[in-house]
Amino acid sequence: QVQLVQSGAEVKKPGSSVKVSCQASGGTFSRHAISWVRQAPGQGLEWMGRIIPIFGQTKYAQKFQDRVTITADKVTSTAYLELSSLRFEDTAMYYCARDNTVDIDTYMDVWGKGTTVTVSS
Amino acid sequence: SYVLTQPPSVSVAPGQTARITCGGNSIGSKSVHWYQQRPGQAPVLVVYDNTDRPSGIPERFSGSNSGNTATLTISRVEAGDEADYYCQVWDPSRDLPRVFGTGTKVTVL
Image 1 (cartoon, rainbow over the protein chains, first blue to last red):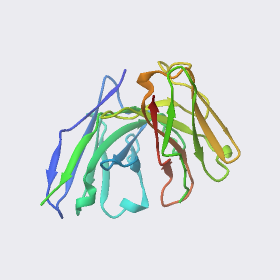
Image 2: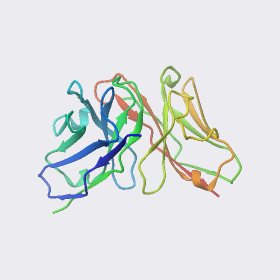
Image 3: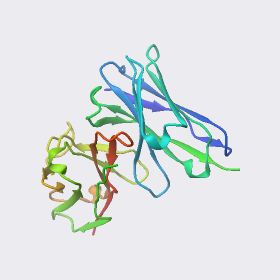
C-alpha cells in the first residue's frame, strides 16, 4: 500500500521561499497525479495545484498561479511544492495527496501526514 | 468559482444518524467526494463518486447526490466519527478547478 512521506516542518521569513517534498513509499506515481492542498490554522481545505509526474504536466489554482511551482522526480517518486514570496497568511499545514487517476475530475485517495510551514519575522 | 456550502456543525447522539449536506448549483450533475478529518490528522477519503466507499470504510458511511444537494449519511454514529467532513467536486472553471466545501464539524454528544 503506497504511503506519501512528507518533509519536515519549516519556519520561513516573509518574502522568502519554501520547498516541501512528498515521496511515495511502497509504490510509484505511475498512472496517478499528485495534488497539493493546504489548510490554514482553524480553516478549511484549499486545493493549490497538481502534477502528473509521468508527463510533467501541471495545473494550478489561479490564486497561486504566480507564486507556486510543482515539480516531480519520476526516478525517486518524489513531488515538490515550492511557494515563493511568502506572506504571514501562508502559515498553514501543506498536504500532498494522490489523485486516483490522471483525470482532473477525480478524488484524492491517499494523503501525506502534512508539513507545517510557519511564516514569521 | 464554484461554491460548495456545508452547515458549520452537526450534533448527533451515539447510535443515531448524522446527515451532512453539501449545496452547490446543479451539484447533482457532478461527482462528489467526501473526506473525514479527525483532529490533528490528515484527511481520509470516506465516499467517492457520490456513493462509493473505499476499502476499509464502514458501510455506515453512505452518500447521495441529486439536484442542488449532496448528502453524506453516517448511520449508527460512534464516538470515533467525531471529525470535520468536507465535500469536494471538480469544476471546469479556470480559476479553481478542484473545489472543497466549507466543512462540517460533527460532534457526538
